[in-house]
Length: 171
Image (cartoon, rainbow, N blue to C red):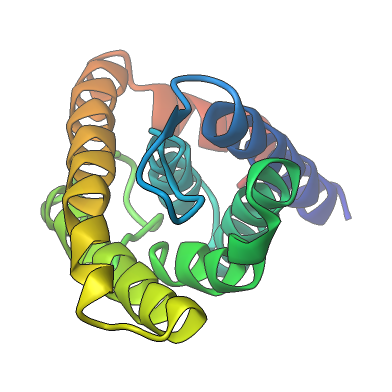
């Protein structure tokens, strides 16, 4: 029971951090569509490497969805799906953050993010041509989040944070 409680608690903490980072820290409105650039995806990536997949999916969906409910509610349904999907390329199975798979994963997540929001914007606003305008924002957001993730991951791997955390929390 303690193991499950640790996972749920950690997922909840990640969801809260994702919400705050996405909605309020480095939150930059972009374009006339209600979208914004943020680096909360960095914490989604971290949740995906620290938590087993179902818990990471929940943290990402809840954190991203809550951020949109606080700032741009029309995007929340799509965000819940997209943020859950961007956890899928990552693995939490190894004792390091920056495995081969996790180095490539942010770039796969960027494609999922850009494609997901492109489709959403095309549907919401009725123009897939106009939705192309949002792609640079998605690239900046995903690229910045990937860079921060890779820098944090390298630093945390040097300090063996993941293996120490897994032992402490029984994740």
